[in-house]
Length: 263
Image (cartoon, rainbow, N blue to C red; front, side, top):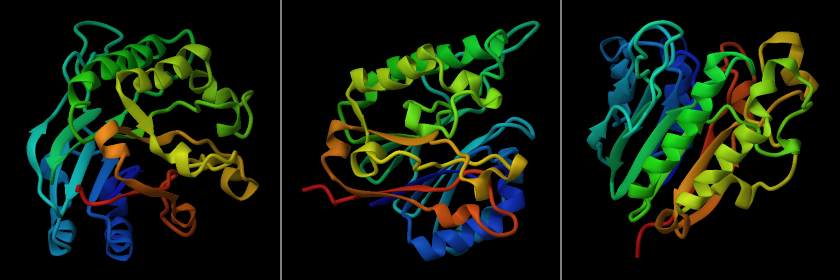
């Protein structure tokens, strides 16, 4: 199975680019984040033409997650157990930040972890709670082949960000955020991109502002965690940096994982 995760930053704005990439890359399952649309607004036709089924979860023009699969798409879940909600006032709402499905024999989760915004903002506490509850829920999936992938909005190592003093990323580099990210390993998972791409400055995100991409000022915040049964089948990981180039690019690029067929 060839699997990928990609924060597409509006699927309606980039559907042609995503479809062309799927055709070139021959990915079997794609986890998407920030689709920025409701399910009925998702552009299904280009995916169907390539043989993909799509499950999408979106509540408004913000956030939103989806999974596209050409190897089966069953047992879809629109949130994980204990997923926290958020609201600055009133009852918190569980946002469209997680979707799970069985693709072939593998349980796949596409997650879009809250940004955190600022250290004093309630969104930062929400971010830490989201990661903690994701770890707790992930324990139940670890008994079989499972992948948890997406935009984690955490730069886990000092070498995963061009500058730790970047004011726009202060919630991505705190000890608490990094600890919450690494805690997924205690639930029985391995972050696969680090196994194959350990070197520094292997970024997956470059902000649109201030010429971040041509200057090489990025962050590594998109990852794939695999349960033991899935990690044992991993044969390689690629970060497709080329997808940050050209007109209409997302500010994130795909992270691709190749898994051997189960014995």
